[in-house]
Image (cartoon, rainbow, N blue to C red):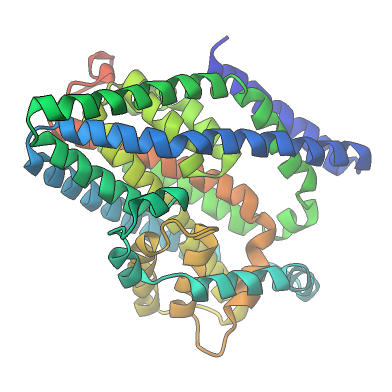
Length: 432
């Protein structure tokens, strides 16, 4: 049985068992599912453990293998333009759906008071974290690491990416006698990290069951009912963005069959859904890009780590819908000028919040501070949606990693690469 099939079965079983425990109020089963979640968290730690050596080694080797340093700038420019464009489109989709579907919060005063009472303290902590988070200028300035070792130790992805690219570019201009031993070392690191990924992924179905079962068992059915329209609007927006934006990019820019592409990346999507972390999914994302789609290491090792750090299409769409929903509850309709400001703020903030814990909520607070009157406390709005944030986080992370792989395919074809899917039915030549 293939790995993605095992993960899908584990996902379904986790949902069914967790839902049964929640609806039937089986406290012993809920306690058991919460307890075994520790196994799922440990599995995420195992995957995360491989991220740094894999990213550094693959990026250094990939950059050094390009030969032409100008190619680094060309690939980087294409990647950034693509990510920013799709993020802006995602925000627009979220705003359009919100204007159509969220005309009234549909929540009683009792439900609103209950949500605020349950989550207000947590939301105030998130606001404090957002106020302490660096702004866009500080993040861009911090891309250059004063101490690369410290950046590695602190899991600061943007500085790590910057150093690895510069180091790889410097290696590419050395004479072979000096370059080859260093490249052979990092090739060995990359190979060992790949073997570790294969070992860790054998545990994926059990970890997925533990993670999903605990989330569903703890999830409040009453809160879900109160926030159903909001949640469905987010999910609908994610589906539209995946089918229209990514589907069009795959067919017309990468020349690939979108359905065949999605079939190839199922395992990545399932792991992303279970872990709610693009960084934790990154090793599987890189492996899938190279082995299942045929993207070169030169492209995958650059585009995908950058995407896991700054590409937040799903998060940006969610922020647009969340802002409109919160505004309906707290202040009423937002003007078109304010909504245009949301597009700009959410797009740029997706870069500014890179590497910050709870990045989705952090960016949302930044957007709310721009969109809502100064007299309105963002914590009151955040408290309304924290109850369903975990489930929606799983959905938007799935879209984020799908967007990363789509970008890698588009950039690879723009560089003249022939992908595995190019020979499958439905593939066409990409636009010039």
